[in-house]
Length: 169
Image 1 (cartoon, rainbow, N blue to C red):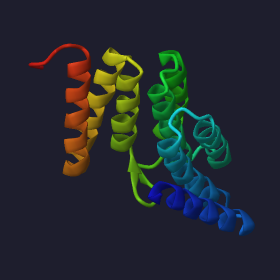
Image 2 (cartoon, one colour):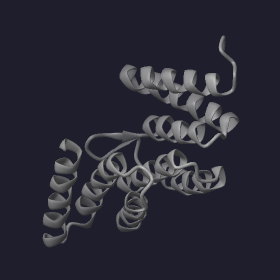
Image 3 (cartoon, rainbow, N blue to C red):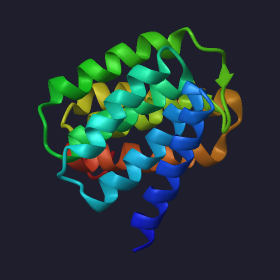
Image 4 (cartoon, rainbow, N blue to C red):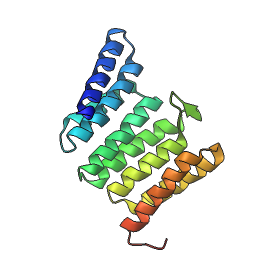
């Protein structure tokens, strides 16, 4: 299907980046490839293993942070212990704090980190921590003028409230 073809294309991009000795680009392609593999095989280990490898390859960069957030989301989706996702996100938060306000292409900001990290925390059941992260994401989106991401944060907050049984906020 389309996801399989997309994963193969991402794998080819990773191979080209490897051949050109561009580790950051290879890690970026690996994150994309891993997310696609995760859609095809959500309970398989391959996606998570590749995300961990991409995180290691990318190091203390926005790509490494994106890989960590994707890994935390994938692990939460598999029902792994909340502590696993929290540990990955705590490590990534230290890196995120040292990054410029907007890094990479497409831009990766603290708003992105706290939005997608908050979603992972919601999924793994760490609802209080998720609420704090999503509130921070909303502040970052307002400050940086990112209404599209801000809308996603509002939806993630609604998911968290529903998961907590707080249907009216």
